Image (cartoon, rainbow, N blue to C red):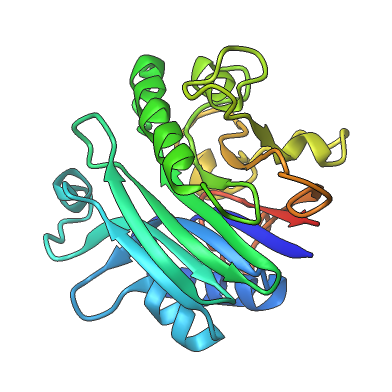
Length: 267
């Protein structure tokens, strides 16, 4: 079994030092094997993913945004970078990054993980959050889909895509990514939303209004963070077994992020 996780860490917003400790505690308690992280900060002397990896015994990879300026202006810190990262229990044999279309510096990070029973093509990303920008997110999904198809050849596991996709399940971009309800960008590339294997009574909202960071935005709750998994090549390797939310409560009084995380068990 392999446990994979996706989590948006809310960059350097709020009381980031207290949140950093809470993030570490969640990961230590949850112990995912591989984790896709979004909104990871790097201040030139320290990288949040690197700090977590060193402290918890992970391998790691990081993809900085090529255009973090809009984010930096929000906190008044021109030295703090912004990006995606991967933590892995097993060695990361190869990485690659693609810039996504749009002017807000989004990227997708690929990491080929040398799992105990074979290689896994693992991807993490964050799509644009602009309201009403479904068409832009569809273009970003097209780039990510081609990256997945290119980098998944010859791997024992099917591809695993994690990320804050800033879109609800019924949206055009999520349907395009899944390939079940509309033709996929790459013929034959079908990615299953792992939340379909969760408790059907749980809406899976990763953007929750009971989280004070979310309540302050006045936005409604939504499911916008995902783990998508390709169809297994043969047997049970990479089959989705379960999906649950984690990091959806305060840790010692501190909400670690404005997003909950999704934890998925693969066979």
